[in-house]
Image (tube, rainbow, N blue to C red; front, side, top):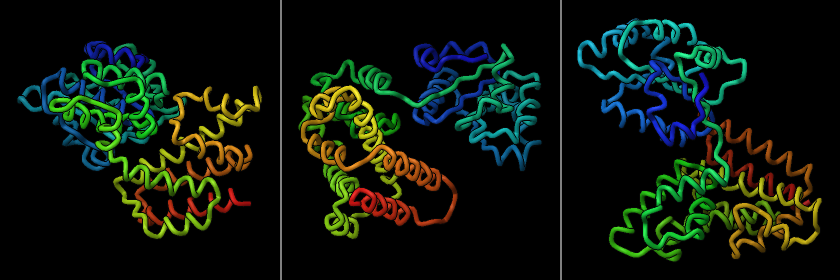
Length: 330
């Protein structure tokens, strides 16, 4: 049975009657939030397993699942990174008579997925798709988290979302910093900019802008000295991806008007005033077909970064920046 994720966020008791639950999708931050809500509601320390554990040691997991609540062990078990190859083993766990709640966590699953079929068709099971956030859901999410925090304005909310590039996990981390700051100081946009590592973000924006604007001299100067660590690499992939998508959106809006200022005003969320000149330069540099190619390249880069490959991620992303710069300069 399919349950909308926003209903779960409002009331985790929506999942109470289901013995087993599938939570899947590309929104890792939302999945993490729902997992935390389940743990809090069940008041237990969960047991976490992964697909490889179920493939290599299924007998022990089945025994623990069957006897967990009987012996006072955790009555909440997560099977993480699940794929269709363990569908039959998941069915075996579901069919066991036990009070232990099974929660299966997957990334994006295709419509014909075996796991989806199991949980969608059975009304005694719950299937919770977690789709990518949009500007509206992120605004509501951040506003709800900060609704009792004095000094938080719409501009600050938009700034948080802009600097997190739509990543709910990053937004959560930034909100935690803001809540801590609010205990001792009144919140202002200036303080938030300093708090959220503005220097690191601005340095990357210089690198990103040089690449998208085709400024080879500036890119060569910056790229050698800038350290793209694994900790911030995904944030920067998200940032440049969001920028490219914004430029593509501007190209679409151009069909209605050639007034660039009007196009910028129509973008959601609003572009910060200090970034407007960069947006205009980049908008004028790129053609729609080239944008499609480079966005496709970035998607492939992101998949490579998420893989378990031993490839140097730093070099891979820098090569992308150089290629992007070359395309923009032609």
